[in-house]
Length: 323
Image 1: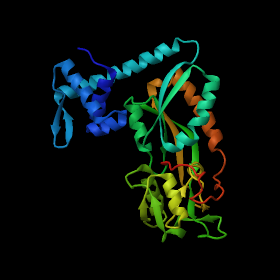
Image 2: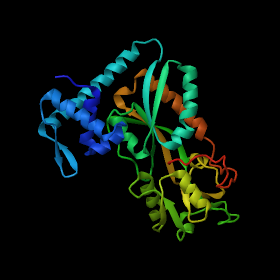
Image 3: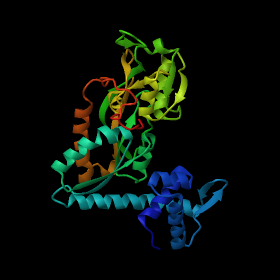
Image 4: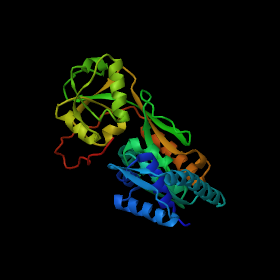
């Protein structure tokens, strides 16, 4: 029997995600491409690995058996890459990095500049993804490491196969329409309980974190606009249709004419780097993690500051980006 890593990874991802469409999104393939990988694997093994159940697919007994071995095969391949890297006298090779948009705009660029200076043999290929998907992407081997977020109020479940290291801690402030709270430097969440809110879906970790802290303050936020995109959120606050929570990095994604008021409550998010535990001593991973930790701290150490006001029509305003 012969198979490729891509075929095995497609099979493993099906056990995690349940649909060909979800696997395609996770691996950066088309749904047809995933189906072709599985079909080739079935031809190689001479076994039926999938069966369709309504709109979903599920693995047959043979598929489940091969998937369990496939995880070990892929892990062994990754360990072999790590062992080969350790035989080199300098850090060199290619790393696949997953990241959410704030990280793509503010954290990765200075890290890449620094990495080129100290590790010219290191090549980084990055991939933008939903921030809630980065943990699964690392666990599944889609990327070698990823930049992600964690919320103390709604911690993301820890996979024992993953190592999660903090890069920076950000405290949330209130973003309110300009002039809505004149002269006020601090406010509690309860003081905006009657306002309309602009928040991501309650199914997201960020949305759940905000719901949690609002409930702790004694109210249920009245969500008028369910928005994932950070720049769109800032634009909506700017037009006066609601309030939201922001961090310093989020504010940098779009210069907006709004007011930022410090929260009396401590509401935080942690920027983290995620990689598989057995890759901790892989030279390329260790090198990029070191660079990320130093440059991310430099980038986020300053307290949150609002950007100079700029109208939404300003042509120099940056493009919208997801949080």
